[in-house]
Length: 139
Ligand SMILES: [Zn+2]
Image 1 (tube, protein in one colour):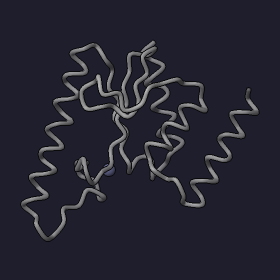
Image 2 (tube, rainbow, N blue to C red; image 1 turned 30 degrees about the horizontal axis):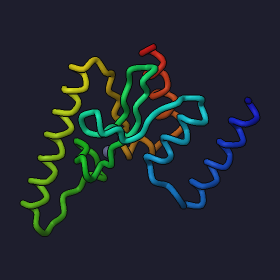
Image 3 (cartoon, protein in one colour; image 1 turned 135 degrees about the vertical axis):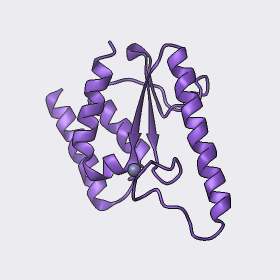
């Protein structure tokens, strides 16, 4: 089993280095899977269609792109210079939706974890280790 994990992990690392398939949601899912977590993805039954649903841990995970979700004080979360008003409105709507979904999920008794794109890009391994610790607390 240990060997299997390291093998999956290696190929996962390689795909990152080659720069292919770097969709951050896929990376998070394949990491969690290789660590033995089983989950559902983009389950429509839950507010905001969380990217990862871990029923066993009563935990949902959102993997947020910093631009679209307008991550506060983040350098990726720029506002385009043209159609600024349109974008601001769009971002504000996304922020409001995120907030509402989070509250609704918490009211349903779910733990909500948000992972930001910039954290993953900055240090994937340590970000995911922290996420794993958070998940494990919710057993
Ligand atoms: Zn960010």
